[in-house]
Image (cartoon, rainbow, N blue to C red):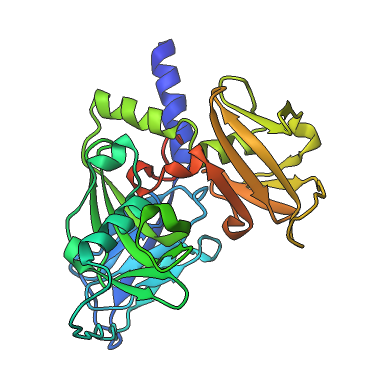
Length: 340
C-alpha cells in the first residue's frame, strides 16, 4: 500500500507541473499545415500538427524557453515562454532564403576539410562523447572566411541533424550563428582566440539503455547546467562545485545573494572590483568541480535569473573558460534532463 501511495504522489507531482498548449498551424492563406514541428527550444518537449494543422503540446512551464514552430519551406516562428498561451493560432510565412553566393577561384587559401575540422572542434567539441557524433547533413554547411578580421563563419539553410550515440539523442539544431576568431590569418586550432555559436535545438530520445543513462549522468556532472542549478539551490560541496579566489576557498554567501521565487531564482552578484578589468566587470572566480576540474567564471552583470531547469537569463554577460567549456554540442543534454 505504501508503494502504491508513493507512486501516486510521484505521478501527481509530475502532472502538477505539466501544462498543455493547443493550437493550429496555418499558411498565409489561412490553409492548415499538417506535419509542422512544434517544440520547446533545448528540450525533448515536441509534437507535430495533424492533418488539420492542429496540435497539442504537453510541456513543463518551468522550462521558460522559446516555443518554436517549424515547417519545411517556411520561416520558423518563435514565441517566448513568458508569452505562451494555452491556445494559439500560428501563421507561417514562406521562407525567402537567399541563394548562396558561389565565387569560383583558382585557389582557395583554406580547404573545406580544414574548415570542417575547425567547425567540428568548436561546435561538436573534442571530448570522448564528441568523437562518435555524426552530422547527417554535413554537406548543408557552408563557410565564409573574413580575411580582414580573421573570422570563420558557418551557415546552414537547413537544421543540422546530429546523432549522438554516446548519449542516445538525435538533435535537430537550427544554426543561427557560428564564428571562430583567429589571432592571425590562419585556420590552425592553435591560433583560435575566440569561438561562439548559438541556435535552436530539439532533442529526440533514441536510446535510453542503462549504459546510456550512466553516460548521461557522467556528462551532466560538472556541466554548465549543473553549475547553474547548484548556484540556484545554493548547493556547494567538495564533491561538487567549490569557489576559489587567489587560490583560497571563498564562502559563496559573500559572493552571491540568492532569492528563490516560485518560477525563477534571482541571483545578485556581489561586486569585487579588480584592476585591468572592463568597465562592466563585476566579479570573477575560479571554480573547482570534484576537487580537480578547474574552470574560471566572469560576471559582467550585477544580477540575473535562473529558471528551474538551470537556464540563465544573461548568457552574454557571464563567461567561462577552462574545463567547463570543453563540453559543447557533443556533450549537450536537454534542459529538462533530470527534472521531474
